[in-house]
Length: 93
Image (cartoon, rainbow, N blue to C red):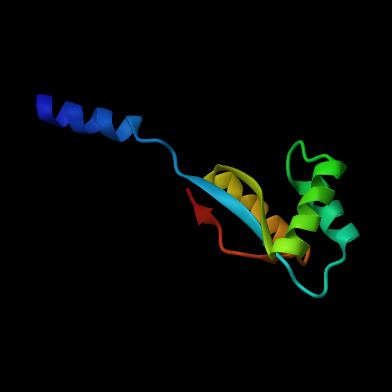
């Protein structure tokens, strides 16, 4: 019985999975559109940071625009994709 309690405790203490939301470069989204979408959907995203990310997406091919709890990452991924951004699959971390 003590062994079962240890197993249950380990299950409870396991960290909740996190995810990364990654936007990919494409030829159809403008910088302005990327910035507007990031500011609209990513919590606490400021325009200056969104512009930096847009330039990173353009220059490096992708950028991690948000990371945190997997469930929220999946929501933001869906919202950004629905606005036309080109998305990499949510990356578990």
